[in-house]
Image (cartoon, rainbow, N blue to C red; front, top):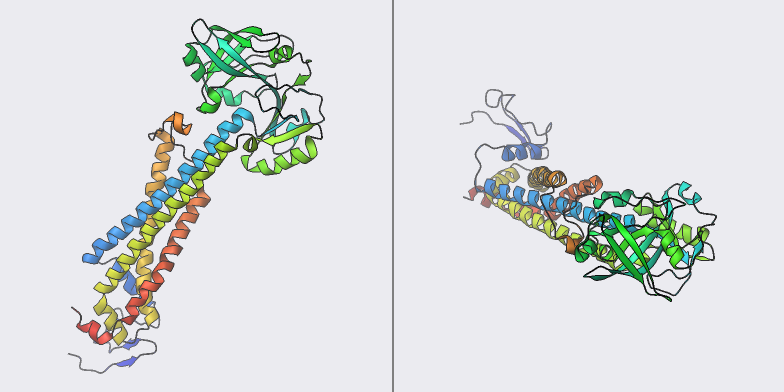
Length: 439
C-alpha cells in the first residue's frame, strides 16, 4: 500500500515516486525515453507469448513467403527475358542493314556491296560490338530416305563464332578463308535428328531456280540454341556458295548484321544507324521489328510479374492487418491503463505501428534469406527445369537485380505500414474505463 502521494503530470506523463517506493533504476521517466518504443520491445521480446504470438508468427511467415515469391518471380522473369533476348540477338544480331526490297522471302535477291563507309569501321564506335556480312538462300536437303526444307545463312571470315561455340553440341564451327571455298555446313540438332545425320556425314542441297542446281556439303558441326523457330530452319555455310549460286560478285553480300554491347542501347543505335549510317541505299531494321511476335510474348511476362507481385503484396497486407487487430484486442487492458495515465492517441498508435514494423522487418529478413537462397541454389544447380520446346530454355534462368530486390523490400515495408495506419486508429477508440475492466 502506498504511504506517500505521488505527483502526476498528464502533459508529459511524468511519474515521480519516492525513492523507497520506486527505485531510480526501475522508475520510467517518460521525459527521457520513448515510451512507445519501450513497450513495443517488452511486447515483442516477452518470454511468455499468448495467442497473439501465434498470430504474429503467421504474419511473419506470410510476409516472408510473399517477399520470397516476389524476389524469385522478378529474378526468374528478368532471367527469362534476358536469356531469350540474348539468344535471339546472338543468332541474328541487333540491327540489320540491307537493300530496300518488298521481297519478304528468305532469298536475298538484291545484293549490296561490302564497300561501305561504315564497314568494317562501325565496330570501333563505342557501344557497337561487331559488324559482319551475311546472305540467305533457301534450299531442300535430300538424303537417301528424307527430304527437308532449309534456309542457308552464308557467313564470311568476319563472322563472330562466340555465340555458336556456346551452343555447339557436336563437331566444330566452320573454318573459313578469304580464298578457298569451304564445303562444310553446320546443321541444327533438330534438323540432324529429322534427317538422321551426324557430323562427318555428307548431304546434297537442291536449289529451286532456273536452272535448278545442287551442291554437296559435309556436316562439320551440330548446334542447338533451343529457339525452335531458328533451329528447325537455319543452317550455316560459307557465303561464297550463295554468291556463286546467285551470280554475285565476290564483294556482294545480302546485308550487314550489327551487334551491340548492351541490349538496352538498341533504341538509340537503331535511330543512329537508320538516320546517319545506313544512307539512302540501305534499309535498317532492328531485330524487334523483324521478329515482333517473340518480343511481344516476352513483354507479356511483365504483366504476369505485376499480377504476382500485387497478389503477394495483398496477402502480406491482409495478414498484417489481421495480426494488428488481434494484437490490439489482446492489449485492450494495457491501452486503457495507458490512456488513463494520460497517454496520447498517437503514443498508443505508435506502440502497435512499431510492433507492425517489427513483424514486417522479421518477415523481410526471413523472406530475403529464403528467396535469395533459392535463387542462388538455382544458379548453382539448376534443379528447376523447363520444357525447352515451349519455353526455349531447358533450365529456369535467374537474373538477380539488386536494385529490384531493394525496391521490393522498401516497397513492402512502406506499403504495409501505410496500410496499417487506418487500422491502428482502432486503438484510439477504446474507452479507458471499459478497457481496464475488459477481461
